[in-house]
Image 1 (cartoon, rainbow, N blue to C red):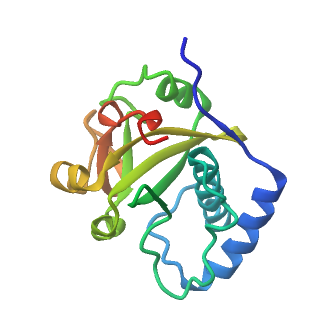
Image 2 (cartoon, rainbow, N blue to C red):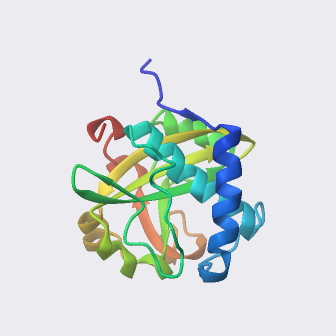
Length: 188
């Protein structure tokens, strides 16, 4: 079986994420709420996801930290001239394994990667979205799931609340099927 890429999260990344989260807190608009993480914890994991993604792509994550958060960023990372946004989520371990092993079906629970409707217009600022996760019960490892061009997301996955299984998402979002994501190795 092919080895699944991952980044081990260092204490330094965690500390920097806490600092950056506090600096950004007054300027960020939270687009949704989840029961398993506070806003602060979600912000920190988002930063850690950006740091880990930089490390995976061979970019010095410390040099990639913004000076100010007074305005919304235009991207999280630039690679080969492409502006990239990094989306990081937490997923229960059983589903995380299925996603990472490419065994998840698009129409089952956790089979799609959601981009909040409130962030839909921001997609125009980026060339690529990298999707990633933490297994919810094991926050020491960051895993890239794959990536997709933002033009493809905008043109094919408009925001909505309806899930393919007949249920509803907790917020309106762009339901990107996991199966259409391109392998992260193509960017590295």
